Length: 386
Image (tube, rainbow, N blue to C red; front, side, top):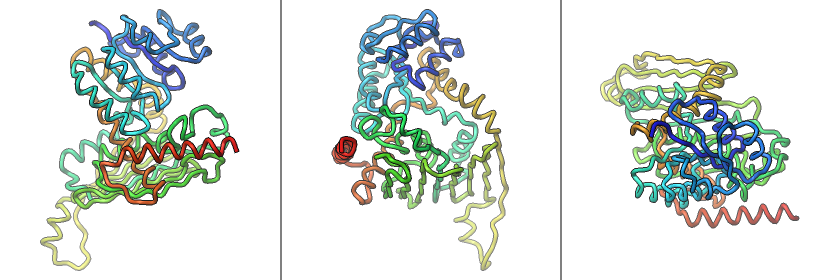
């Protein structure tokens, strides 16, 4: 195989972008050979804008196409694990859009199937893992400089969405169509990074608010608290009704403090590395209110550069190029598909805790989550027809 032949299932917002980039040859190791969508207007767009590409209305026909080696799944969230499983069974490599699904049970079954197909590459579009600041944070943590993590806090409230956004209709912003609001729509990348950098918690307590200042049935204001096996804790705060909002991640460890903050024009990372671990300093110190010697390490990127060069083009293409090389040459995946269940576990646990008003221990009760989600869908349906 000289190049990976891609088929894209779903050419809406994200699938459309992937199709354009592949069709322009932005991945020298890949070629777009097929697309599929149930919407006639999107198929018509493909007919008029994509060269030498087969167009299907049924994804099962695309999966039967001998000219497709790998598929990108870019459909509504509920369908991600369903289609990904069928693609693996059809012998296709799979790169799925985030989130991996709506509920962990379906994603767990997908992961189990993928483990039985080691010859096939399974990845997820966690493109934020290629952001240079989060990559640097990961390097610092894995180097041991941070020491044992004590606390991870993220305020991510710059997702402003007015009522007009929700009034567009469709499957977005509904329990039935999308499986939730800000946690499942806007925050999958941040939830992935939250656990990628800070690890998976053992407990979670969530305060979930739906329809704050908006006529919607899904969550648009969420705060959850996490506890970890080593005694560390975390806070995650997000919303879509604050303006201008905040994007600030703080990670405190025995060896220092790491902050990544996004402002209007820049993104910056500051790591204040202690010259002696706090635990070691405390064991020897005799002063009443001392200061621990430290050194600051700074890294900055321009928002325009990060958005245009690294974001709209580079971040997604970094994942695609990496995936192609994984198929062709066995290159290690930046974002293995099996890891998609981790961030989804956090959102599932947050929803379950918010609905029940109780602390949730991990691993969570998957059947209880599905039951509570079905109740949310039913309430939404009744309110819609009221």
